[in-house]
Length: 282
Image 1 (spheres, rainbow, N blue to C red):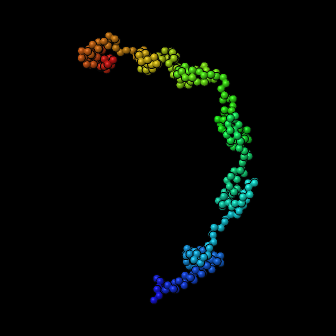
Image 2: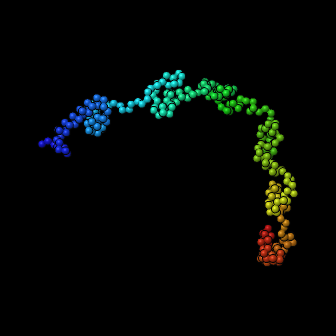
Image 3: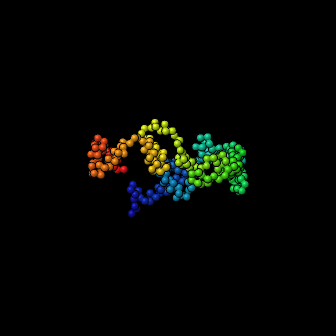
């Protein structure tokens, strides 16, 4: 008994229809129609038409037709034939076969030849740019060689100088030997230690008491801790307690009196307890 398909057709009849469709696909495609047009004419999918052509051993033609014509590169001396893209033509490009040809065609100065560095003792080979050669440059392969070849970078008049601050030696031109320091930092440190009385006391007197005390302390700090403290006292506010009052505070503190009691006895007011506390902590 013959088998049947879902549509009620037998397998033999189905194979006969496929063979007839395949033959029709080959004939239509051979007449110059595209695969898509053949599929529409035969009522099948384009992939089915392609499969029928493949089973028949027919080579499928390419569908990408060139949209531009071939042309020769416009650079002088280049005979390459190429096909620009439509996008290049729309933007006004597509005149040269490669980017290198484009650059060469727009070159202002001719390409320079390879050469050896002009500095004595340097055998480095390099190729300068055409613009450098046109400007009279392009003789040295690096900025270092260019600097070493000029007289401006040669030491002529000068000698080794010992720094007056740190003692290090450094080569100096005669025009700068008078400074006598190896760096600006050493010059600042030396000036700070050996500045002397560079600011008038009249100017310092314009500063308020607490700030003047701090300023004098820092100004004399290079002399040592004791000198800095003494300098701060000289420039600060006047003492709040005399030596006699301070001695009295120490005496009462030794008896075990509180700071409030001592302040009331010595200064006449218990609110000066903090002043008493500072005295007895010295």
